[in-house]
Length: 409
Image (cartoon, rainbow, N blue to C red; front, top):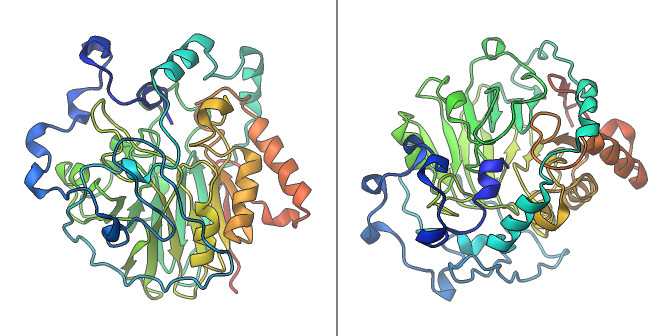
């Protein structure tokens, strides 16, 4: 989460409190009124009986679209998981609600919280810890050879992974830019040079914050590259010339044809939010992705998320997750960031809730987005993993640029 998006956590204040024009986002990233769906094409607020049909998710009771947290119905851990939904057509035109504030699991901070964080100035590591940047793990190497049976991951940094699955190459939240809006430049280089990437068969995006949806990186891709997006983001991609765009609600899925057989990608919930301009808070959805190989092996890419009940529900619906790609950084100060960013101990707990065999930490060691010392996430996740007694080999604490191949069942 960038400094720009953190400054914009609250809903748009009254006109007298708005940011001056010099601090607003460039017009190229705003959503012109002429490109928004007219009110006649937007869905009205869901009636109580319509929540499941609209994709509210099992165990989720939508609240009013006011930014208030919702009350979630507990799910019994022994309950039989519902059958997976049938894959939706790729590129399907969709009509979505005006916003997704009823999906928030915690209220967004208001003006007082933003004033406090500005006053305390704790969104950067203490100066005396910056020498740790030189010790951040960076070990780029050749990506493993991949065929139709290979399931491998390569960490490019932050939340950007190169996933080889079923003979496809899938990028997650690709950010190859040296700097993103409102954030200091990356402290480690990208783990894989763009020119060294194999042809990209698809891209999955978790949400629209600038450190996860990077327009300059996406512009490097052929416009026919399939983009898989959260609900409400398809217009953003189509305006930039992409022709194979699919946006999904929670618990929906698509299948990509692949040399080794169809690869299934499910969009799953996360404890987060969305905002890209001063006027689009929660106008698009946020979440993670579940990638299932033709032979049934599964990877969970969490995107950006706080800790909460969704991990247990994802594990219930998708048993047998082999690898969880979970964020461990950008968590300090906890009073502000706990609802939207897991700390290392919460990431380990989330891995257990998911029932995942292995954990690969991410969302650290790339951009300094918050107040913890640069190396602290690594030390804490190793200690938390050791405390569980689980095999050390199942903690994939990779350096930026490193790869790992997931063994077949």
